[in-house]
Length: 224
Image (cartoon, rainbow, N blue to C red; front, side, top):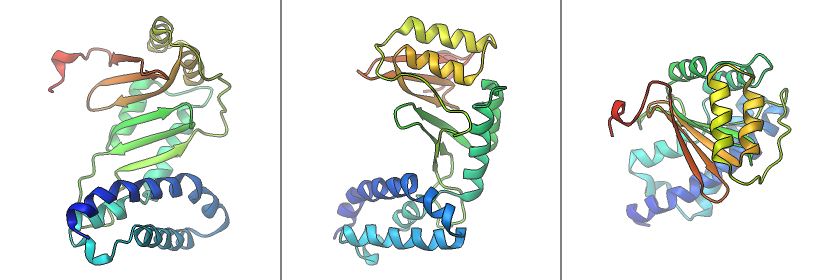
């Protein structure tokens, strides 16, 4: 298989490993030691490569090997993020500015909250490197079970409702759980907060979009 074809196949590998991370890793870690979970993970990686008929010689490009290795979530980063999301979802909550500050300390450049899958995906600024000890460029965490959301889904898009919920949060009214319930009620299915881009993009089920700049930021303050 050519290197060009292997690059085209890398997306499929990532999807397979992403599904493994989200669905099986929590179960494995609950029953086995971390070392065994890692061994099972490596076995799954090899099976994914074999499934796609890709030999090790196909990945002479070191970056491709690193991409495969990076799909494994860094345990330290994952634990730190889970602790942060638990604090955000607690009754006391955590302000957006403080959340951004903590994420910046973890080298997070953006994160996506999906109310359909009830997961939070974070992306770090780690560049590709031959070292396998660097943090993963992404992490997927489920919503904390200690603070379940009780929102209804598939609501029609209501931009005014989205903006109203945002303004309340900016004014320090309520907590994150209340904010989430209000934006979902207004039709939001997911949103992505761009830490470096200084904006949050809220999305609806039919492709509706509302872009909210961080307070004090705007197009003129961010380099394109």
